[in-house]
Image (cartoon, rainbow, N blue to C red):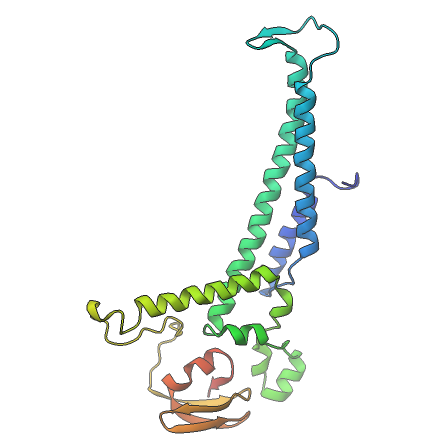
Length: 254
């Protein structure tokens, strides 16, 4: 490790990234280089602890008047104690690095969960979103509505985070199928499917809703028939047919 840095400096940089992500409400690119550097520092610290313990356990070359007689023979008490502050320092640095790594990854996991729910559980959509346009261009093209479009997510994730999102989506699908479907919950009096991904922040007041198409989403089959949702068009449709498109950002209420 460079003499210009202290143990824990790299972990502090990682926490700074998490704070900046929270302050700006954006998901920053996964810092694989910094995470690997901290892991290498952990290994160096563990090697330093093993070396210090080996030195403390080594017998003194000459007889020492301070040596005491232990259960297993002569022991140099002063030599053992001399390495304990060093071991404590290294162990403290290891534990702090672990806490910082856990805090960084926990923050990203919680952010990914929020993103998943914000798009109504549409994982393919979340992983295929294009970068959001600049605010000026968004205001000119869609009256400022597109400026709130989600940012490019896939390029900011590590492979393990993509695997986590897929496992998270599969777990929720299993929960919906086994516990909240009318077929599995008939014995408990559940007569209709419960949509876990439906938004509940603003309960709907009407069964039908006026919507404006923000992004092309193709032909959608509704109770009124097939509707081709093209950008800029307005429709009066049944809310239950297109609510997932509102959550995913294709439509907006007007």
